[in-house]
Image (cartoon, rainbow, N blue to C red):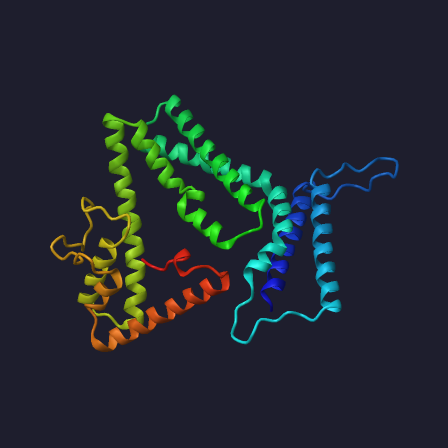
Length: 309
């Protein structure tokens, strides 16, 4: 299937699926008795929006079919990826319409997420009602700022490289970082100490879970023995971006640290046998090829989509 057909199909499916959900959601739980003709049927509040989206989808498909019959189909050269920039540019009007249609649902989801975050931080640090309200206001302001950035980008011809750069530079607004930054700026004394301690525990659990999962995968793929698994676990933990030396992690040795300037991949390779290293290098090479193909498909500079640990 061509990438353009895939995107149109996914967007169409999303819109139609949402339409069905919205209609069903507004129906009563049981089947009502037949309604006399003189009685008007209540209008579904989502019907106009759904009808508009379905018309736009039909128009988009009609234009695509017309173009296919009046002009030869442009096919990428053998071995070349589709022109994703052109596909995204063509799909921009529909994406904008869908974004508008789903905005009420997005706001509802964000509101629930913010309430959950405020409740969580209140339990972690014992926030007062005023502090909880301040945190909620802060997160709501960040969400508005984030949406304004993305809407501004969507208002222009979509540029993949610009969107990716915006995501790396904070356009996505890491929610946990936003909460941690607020806590660092607004909590003090016992509250600050309690929050830091409990967040350190959370990070420790997250790092341990991630490292154990990766050790399990590498152990299965490379046939690691128990000693190697312990060393790889140590490397994975210490090279995790959230690692803090003050964490009390079983199986992590402060004296067995990753040498300065050595990458995670190099450190792991150093504990493997020659046969294991051959398999590991092949896995890394395949991963790099996939990233390169993705970069090529996006038509962006390699640095815009860095791989890594």
